[in-house]
Image (cartoon, rainbow, N blue to C red; front, top):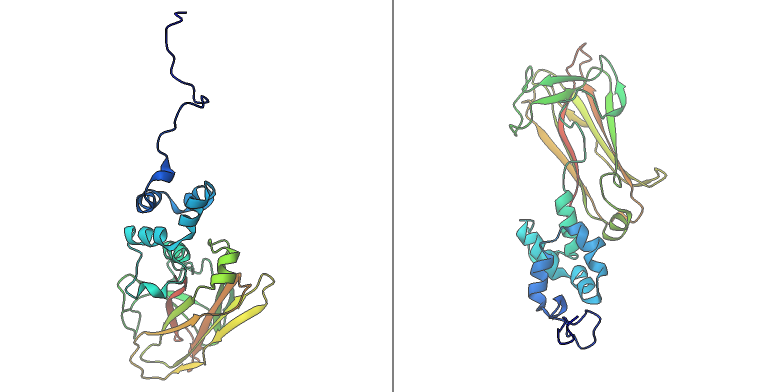
Length: 268
């Protein structure tokens, strides 16, 4: 070995000076870099790197930027958003949690089915003595018979990705919507009942509509009913959605209320 040959200093050599690291970057630049990382990795990995990164991941600026980059900001004032990290995740997850809301899969996903009279049936819009639905995306509806028909769906919020701390602490608004209509040649009744349930299926909050009566000789137009749950307290793990109805003439067949496009959404 040539004694005059010089080797590069080892990484352990105390005389070697490290180059500038990420911690030397201006905070705005670091936020820009972090914003390009998937949100789950920010929480599970980046947040654990150092105190500076933890503070950035827990702060608002990073999540405001991610929301802006992905078009998730809303028209209202930014001051309305209490927690931008939760707002981001809730916006990304936002979807209709009711499965098969318009009867495209027959009665799949619906349970506790009560088939009064001739039972539930699925028909194509607009149907006899009916009207088209306000949205072109909806093609079918469920229709009831001459005795009470009911059906329900229970939504498991944890299975849909809404973790316990989020539901207990943030308590995001839970929006419920349903659409109903009658035939223009028959009167009918309609009811909606939605409950927020605990782990043990105790009722923590409930919305129950009155029994809505649609008279004979109505114009068969579709009506929307909605309710928003908020400040419902900790412990909500399930949403139970139930609706139903019947006709008021007791005619054999399917002259009762028509329902479609039901939805339950957890709002950012």
